[in-house]
Image (cartoon, rainbow, N blue to C red; front, side, top):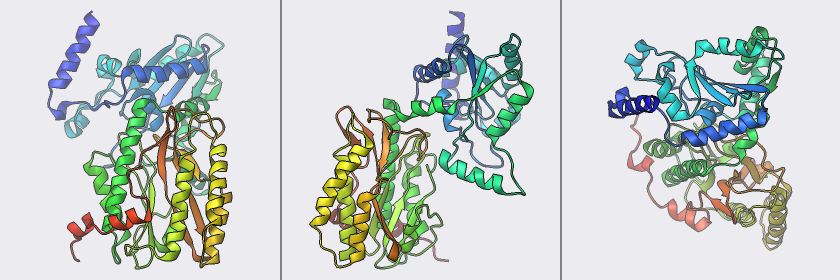
Length: 475
């Protein structure tokens, strides 16, 4: 009873304080849902193991802190330099947080700390909260009586703002390959410290345990991806309205970003691909500094970071507002391919079965099409054999972790549907992308409200966009 009264008093104090005195904590996931996730990890590591999850580091300069996806998934906490210990032997979870920094709070506002132990326990559902300077002592206690338990932690790079593991690994490889850099990853250094300070522990990888958990989204996660997808679609539609010859790629980027931010997104889920003409041929083009030219197609692939969840949405449209005959055939083929994939997605089937069925349907569609340019017919034919039209998982990261393609689909699996083709001889790339969730009886396309047919896209382009309404200031 005393503990409950203390927690109630803390909650009342936080709730009655001014916004400057409130410590930020997410409202999307309950302590029960977070606790259920940690319970699954505890069950997976077993009763003779512990797990440590390292939170994100303090950001230098004026960079806004964002928690790592892995730590956020298990705690909901946005506090730098934090650690989560999962004790399989006692089936307990302990958070280790920094102590209160009064000087920093005077400048930036209140942050949850070790001194807020009772409140943090209530918010997150963990069993105990200690200062992060207590983690070393806690680990020594596990090593006192041999054999020491197996210690699980992440070997894969953590995902931060606008990051995915695959891209982080590529970046890490470049750093390691540089003979004048070669700095170890934060995860690598953490494992090195654990091995050096606690040789009693056998270190195991937590990655294969958490990845499968993130594949199937909870209803609340689906809701967040849906909202991120909605904002992505609305942002891209604003870019479509704003398109015209001589408009800059970065101006379309700004139009979409405005929609994201004005609707509460905390930034972008990944860097914008806003690519006109042959720039679109580069799958991850990012410079966004070219002028749109009459007769070209423009590609936008962009989505926000909405309360830690994102989407993956892409559309193409003609700069001048009208598809020419060749563009109509290629774009129309991709739209039809998307619909052929969508109608086959349901629980119990595999991604390969969906793609095989869509390929058969699109082969018949292709047989009925006439092409003035044989290169375009060849590109459509090659698209039939491409196996990437059903793409990657989407969630906390745009290229989310896990693999949904090695087993039948089940409700709650979220991924992108991304039919595409290349006309290599013309450096022409055509695609459209939506993010979907598998439901109990089929599929829900989060962005089915967006224009996709040729007629719908051309009609939207007749409207003025924000770039025309709020024209750039002349130099």
